[in-house]
Length: 253
Image 1: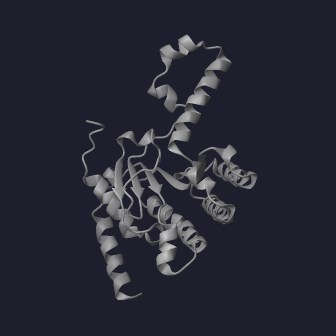
Image 2 (image 1 turned 135 degrees about the vertical axis):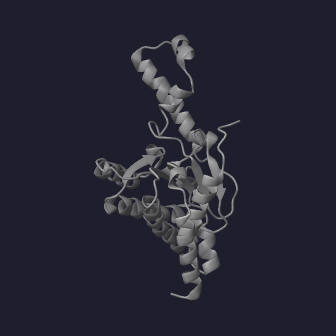
Image 3 (image 1 turned 45 degrees about the horizontal axis):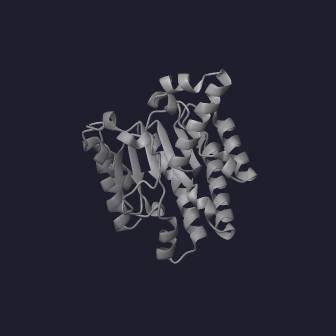
């Protein structure tokens, strides 16, 4: 261990020691940004960057397990990413599939897919379904893997699901117009039954949500970190939690 690593480890321990666990967010959303830029800066290939980013996920979940975090949502692939050239998309999907398998195989976390399955290749769908099924009984952190996810698509899917559900019940449009509200729509989101994210972390310096959890993040706190996702460290995670704990949440006021 070099001097720099030792200093970071000591600093991380100091930040962790001062962290108020009563103020830790229950649900953290993470936009895993910067894999390709990290690879370019390191002289590697995009595929190497995505693999390094996938490895970092396990570290993040381990750090989350050391706190009182209950839900972690990982944005791994957007609906826009599905438009990438096949020579880019196929290796990326393979890396994501391996990452999801690793999360499920760890045995500590419960996997839940958020996104539109129908937009994904059959092999990816199979991996996501198997990960959900094999971890259904686990009482650890709930890990939402957002693959083929878009915030606008989620809201559109929620409204579509709501309409189909009530059509099957025989509800007329007039009756539905009387009862529809935000709670009813929320019951049809990918994350139905879960708490909304308290904190959304985005790496790589970009200061926008890019459509991530548009509905659920209405009252979330945001933390934008300059480092690329593969270089994200425990001290960066702890700083985000510390920053969150220091804020006074006003819930829209």
